[in-house]
Length: 37
Image (cartoon, rainbow, N blue to C red; front, top):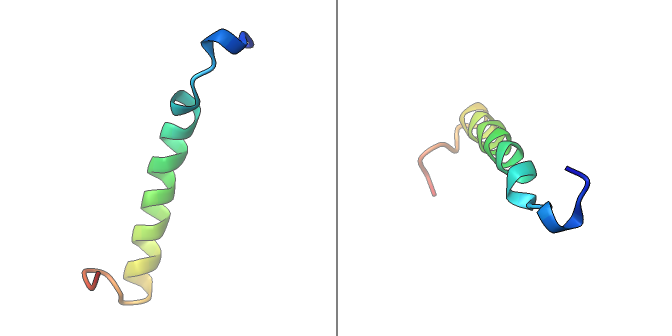
């Protein structure tokens, strides 16, 4: 919605956050640093 009263950043950032986790997980496996933190 375009109403500022109904603006919830979690609705927008939720999927982006999940996508970022997948990217980071892939990079960690790619560089062999998976499971070291």
